[in-house]
Image 1 (tube, helix red, strand yellow):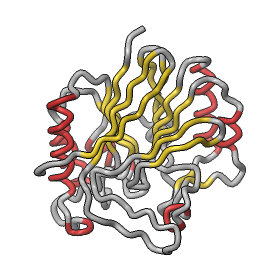
Image 2: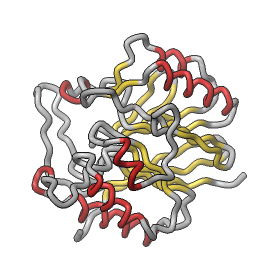
Image 3: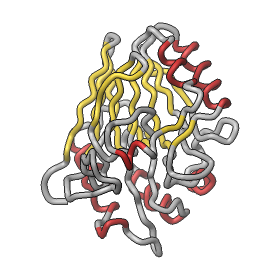
Length: 258
């Protein structure tokens, strides 16, 4: 069987002209450094997946920045939305982005796996949600995947990680529909999300999950504080290898001059 290679970046927080650059760093400079690394070492990949918070304010100019830097990237990419994004503005700049019932989500087979891109943006606020329509869509996708491995990419984590201000902003699932849907699936399933600006992994609903550091700034692991705390750190990306039903996620920090 062939091996699939996926590249993964998250939480870019790009700020176009007139938008404040968050935390006094240049998110575009950091993103370009990561993309140079990917060009130098990983152009054999099958997909580049960006799991939301592509823009800081969700403005059209923010997405034009992203379009410009991805314009000649040699690997096909897929865009997801996060809590900072604006669906309509994103589609104005990236009109080929698939929308299903108003949500920017889709799926595709790749090798012996199925890649699922789930929209977890809430109607209001910075937390995440999966409404009944999205849950029903995901149930159909997982059913169609059958016994094949499924990789579910999304922005918000569905579980708490022990950091109070981040846990308040997780994906809210009041009826535990997502949990029970995944609990009932026996085939290999991997959850992959951003939002936390941290590397985190574990098991939830019987399946492994991975959160990835940002191309922007990392967030501190503070189990006692009530406010988010950022600190200087290198931009990061992920390299995912899928082969013979096995899924390996490598978290890579991009060191060196930006």
